[in-house]
Image (cartoon, rainbow, N blue to C red; front, side, top):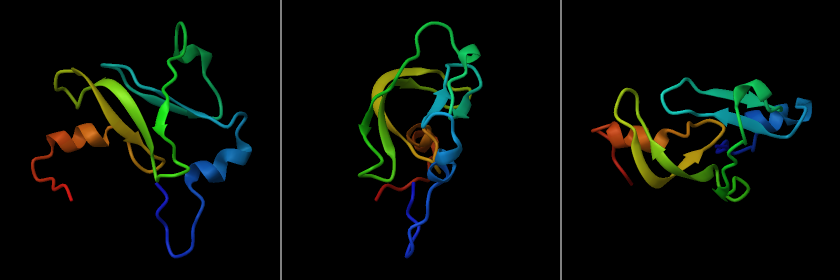
Length: 110
């Protein structure tokens, strides 16, 4: 999310983009296992079979985040919930924001 004002600043990804082998990043998110993020390359040892590409339903060009549709989620040791929902991923936020907020009893929605 890039909300720096009054003078716009480049995001982390925008700053490292010229140094990357490819203009991409990967997120290896597996149920019940640690996650990894790689910038500029796809690690062939990190997966078996085809890569699951996730479409961005609202690109960052127009918003301060990428909106993604997911088929389920899990927060910490809680049970996995298989449910189609939307989440967000941004350079300064986590794709688990939606799920985390569901567990915080003192949250307020504006």
